[in-house]
Image 1 (cartoon, rainbow, N blue to C red):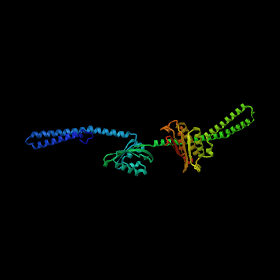
Image 2: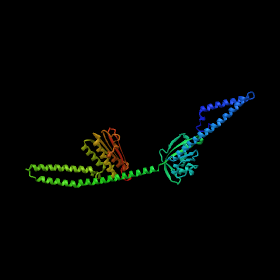
Image 3: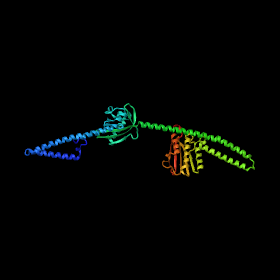
Image 4: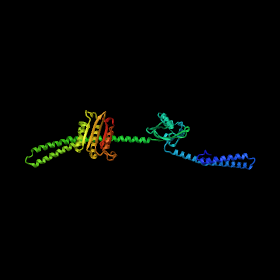
Length: 427
């Protein structure tokens, strides 16, 4: 009776009371049989009590089996229904790694019926190259005594369908039972759709980055064309106007002061126009970047920024032809990153000093721009309107480099980057 699952007779108090009652009944039977000749009524009474106890015991046993045994069957059926309706594949194996449970989701994932899977080794659904390692891992898990853990925390797990197709999975394993009858249950999930989605996102990200790079290249080409037209054609026209104005001023009547003043005003206006044209041309695309190289262009940029902003600037540039092998696209990206960093200093940093370092070594170009301003706040680089920093990061990333924006030791902001000198290997 006490072997029936969930029976009330398995309670310790009931077991103790039943033991005491049995002991009392045995004692009564002993006394009755010893004195049965002298007291026939006692012997008869004990026999009747024994028959009554046996009848009640049989009835209680049948009742426990009917009630609690039936409920146990219902619980087991409910558990089986839950396992069967689970959306994730569930596989249970014994200590010899033979499959003893294979739910409906496992049938769909492995394209194998339950009848074909039950009783076969688990290795049937593991690619050949992983079988030895899997067996070792399972034996090690058995020795740890852990009840459950995640499988493959840092690596991708692979499973094998019945038709020979491999697919990636995530899985967790648990164990239960005594060492002699240990069972291992694996709950897994097919990650093929997620991996396909991730690969699609990576491909789209790469395509968008390439498109962005092409747009930037086209923009730089257009800036270069406009800058050269401003510098060459408009500059020549303005120079011709200055020469004509100088010719006219020489021939104006000396006594007409009003005409002389007007000519002087026109000359000053032409000088400002020429200066503005040169500044606009340099902002669009410094021609010295193409003619003289990155080092001279960066030096001119920093000095011009210091003159226009009033912020004291220092620049340290590697010499001895360190930038001779730098690709044109890389030089442009470095120049624009330095230019954007200086612009951010002027707009947001409230700094009084700025430092720029530019170097090239071992096929890499390095630069740092640092200030002593208020410093960048946490999250500023990720704001929706921080397009300048995002543009720098994307341009550098496309070329195969890295860019970091951190707090500087002086309290301001430091922008540092490393970019391969040749852009051919980046794409």
